[in-house]
Amino acid sequence: MPNPDRRRVLPLTIAAAITAGVAMVILQQAGQIGRGRNPLTGLRTNFWYDQLGYLAISADVANGHFDSTEPVSMTGVSHYPRFYYSLVGVVARVFGLPTVTAWNLTSFVLQIAAVTAIGITAALLARRWWVALLAPLPFFTGTFAYIQQADSWYTVLQAHAVLWGPYGALFSNNGETAGLCIGLISVSGLIWAWSGQRRTRTRVIVTLIAAALVGMLSSFQTYSFLTFTYLLAYGAAIAAIVFVRARRKTTIVAAVVMLAVVFIAGPLVADRFGQLPTLMFGLLPAFPGLVSAIVRTRGLVALAGTVAVLTAAPQVLFTLGGMVSGDPFLTYRVASNHQLGVVSWQALLSATPVLIPLILTLILAFRLRDRLTITLATTALFVLPFLSVNDIWGANAEPYRFWIEGLLVGGVFALFGLARLSTRVARADAEAADRAKNAPEKTLLVAAVVLSIVAWGASVPDWVNSVRDGTMQASWNPSTERESAIAAMAREGSLDASTGLLVTERCVDNRTAKVTSGSPFAYYHLGMAWPADKDDIDDIISARDAGTLDFEAMESSDTRFVLTDSNCATDWEALYADRFERVSSADYRLSDGEVLLDGAQGDGRITLWRVAD
Image 1 (cartoon, rainbow, N blue to C red):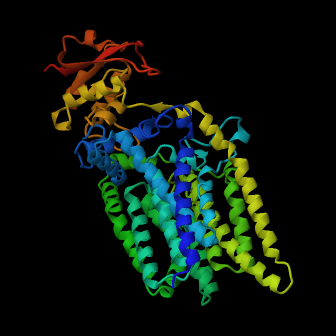
Image 2: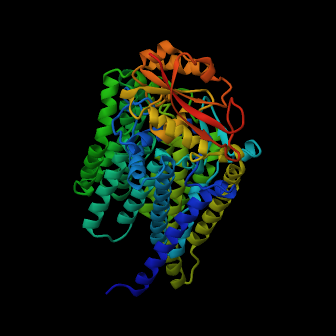
């Protein structure tokens, strides 16, 4: 018969976990809500250059263009992972939503789902429904940036590398946010499946689904895909070492030797074969443990690995094909990754809110001989730092991005470990009481929890500072009269590169115009993909930034349309009257707080022109 207590507690657990997910999203958007903005309809403008490029993919799909072109100009080819952004575009298209609204809505749903999965898993590990309410805590871990500089919420390292808490990775609602959420859902499912007395069928199904989801992340975002691929591969290897006694020493020695090989030979592999093969080479130390894991699970780990490879293959092979063919953008992208390491005292200090609970959890797990928690803590303490120093062993794949993701993942693993140990300590305490003794493990657990809360709590002012930071909370409203007029005129000019590209006057942002209209513009995002006529478009961009038009480059790149604003200081309407043919125009009124850069503040008119032959 079903346990009546369990039947009552499970709904409470699920309700608490969903509540925690909704609360996390509300707190994540506290800066927007506190300023009277709708988080669903606006887009954060802090660090938004890349986000506008990703949104261009969604805008293309929302308007019926599904091909893998450079998204802004809709020419050339893009090898950038686009599946998630295409999914956002499908949501916008199916439900008739503005692209930005679909962008935010899809992300919020995934974030709620991730926190819900974490909450349910933690509560089941602890056997206490209310533990689910603690699931949002890792998402607000800070990095002590406020100690180094008052009112700051992130630390700047070399080049453009930064250290910030998970809220810095989530606030943009981009593919990294989605990748982290799906990865955490997958890990939560695996821990649930393998932590108790589950049926073999249940474990097989959950394991294969989790492997498929992690493999699919290759077409979401590269860094979240690699983070969870490493976690799953090394997690399975470490679990085999912890749970299987046979040939344990041999397996450990082999793994250590291979780890040394990675650090010694990794830079040579990178020089000879490139970045992607080096990242695969970084999995070498997991192989001895994986062999043991495959044997212990009767081939399930091998099957899961095959599933992950198959779901990752489309994006990986597409990217490899571009690299082999000498795609100029991919060559540039690899070469641009330098001075992005995190090996510094700042990185070590900033990681302490996660390192402290993980280390304490590992110590207590060894004392209690809890193999699951030993596996979780050891995996987090090895994989996350290992990826964060990938520049040392040759991969040089933006180490600071792995560090940021590791702060969230490490916090979640610490929560799972402490939740699991609470039940083991309760059991040890009960056994000690039967013998009229005290259980020292209970004291150790309380100390670990207190120290972890202190370390985490001391880091939270970073999140508070991010909420108060006006620059970080600045938002763009894509639904004002002016933005609507720009979108309408752009659509009237062109909806496909075959009918010609558009260029905008300087006070009209061609990036946001792309997002609202889905039309092809003579622009591109340097670190994302390159258009077919890159040199000509570079010339157009340079001329536009200088307040002029390069008609020769426009003709070469088939840029046929121009958008002007009567408020622009450059006044192209008068300057190029002899070169323009008026197509259409739309009047607008400025909204409260709407500011025109390089233009007069007031109501105006957006005009679409065709360049005369």
